[in-house]
Amino acid sequence: MFAPLSAARRAARFAWYRSGLFWRTFLLMSLLTAASMGSWVGMISVFQHGQKVQQTSELVGSAVTITRAALTHSAPDLRRELLLELVSNEGIRILTLNDYDIVEPPPNTPLMADIAAAVRERLGKQTRLSSSVNGVPGFYISFNIDEDEYWLMLERERLTGLSGVQWLGWAILVGLLSLVGAALVSNLVNLPLARLTQAARAIAKGERPTPLPEKGSQEIIEANRSFNQMVDDLAQVENDRAVILAGISHDLRTPLARMQLEIEMVDLPQDAREGMQSDINQMDAIIGQFLDFAKPTDAATFVAVNLSELLSDVGREAARIRDLKITLDLMPDVHVMGNATDLRRVINNIIENARKYGKSPGQDYTEIAVVLRVKATGHGRRAVIDICDHGVGVPQDQIAQLLKPFTRLDSARGQANGAGLGLAIVERVLSRHNAELTVSNREGGGLLLQVALPLAG
Image (cartoon, rainbow, N blue to C red; front, side, top):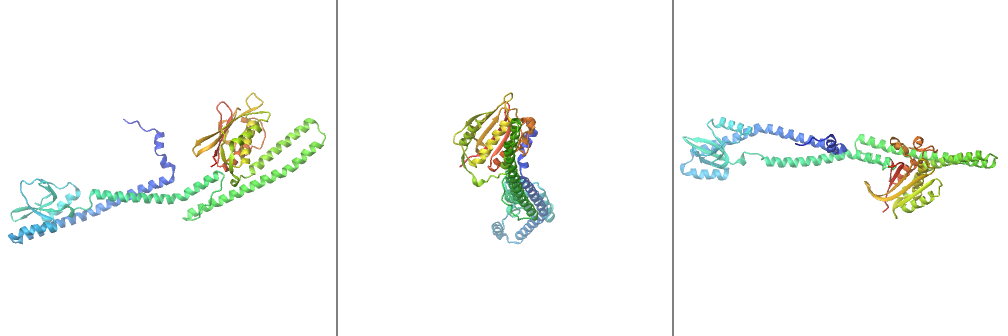
């Protein structure tokens, strides 16, 4: 007994069918082709049945009638030559019918039954049909000349159409051609959708896709034209946002500098002075985040970067911070393609985010570990950076919110202030480096950020 398939196994078995529109279209077209071929064969069989019965009965009747007349009216000394000529030229053999002949009936098929009935109606009800006499196969029909009985044997090739093997061969050939045609048609139908999907994925990665071709059916032209227009509009919105953010941030730094100067010149209590300077420094840091978020990353500036040395430099600088303890475990000589300045900004933002929000419970400092390894991933071998803290982590249902701009989870990560752009800047820069950023809670407490970068060369 076989155990019934579970719902999960049944779902996995048909996952390929649900995975793509190409396979759905191909399967449906193949089923339609098979149904059409079956209907066509059935209709031909029905129409040919009556025609084949009539043609076969006429052929058999004419052969028997002509042979009987030739033998009856020929001279006795010429009948032997006549029989030889019938065998050599017409494929007709005349045998004497004996009572001891071993006779096999014709095949029990509807076609043969109708042929036998038509032949008996034409030659007489006493006419016998056989598929073999004395072990010799053929198509045998009995007839009389006076009191003598004879067998007339016709070659089967003159009566049968295509054999079952021939029908099977033609069916396989037509089926293969139909499958090839279905695959080509399915590919042509799904090619525009595949291009659209690829372009949408490029947009999701922060890239600008190649414009889709505006050709084909009217629906495809309209869809591709609308998509291309959407890409242009998104690019324009992105440029406008960057200009606005950069302009506002730049303009705000002028009054901040003036306020800083006035604080230095005005006689204020030390506590008030330090509080105002702290507020100004915080506003200046927020403005810096706006500028970093608005700054584009140009792929044309990418070069081979020694990621091991870069992380080592960032670690040495971070170790100077009073409330930060950092440990490094770096594989040497790991090179990636990218912009060194932007990658340094990414690592600094991650470390600063961890310093602010990932303090160890009961401590006034933050412990951060940075590990660099080369690993095999689903996209090939990549340089993988693990940066983790030992804080309280983030609720699982709120991790996805961390990468959104202007989002701060104060309830989960402390009370630090800021614009909420730290990890949004990281995700924005990494997407232009064709890198992957994964955020998860670390076993034992804290947050783990994993960055996977393509290797250089």
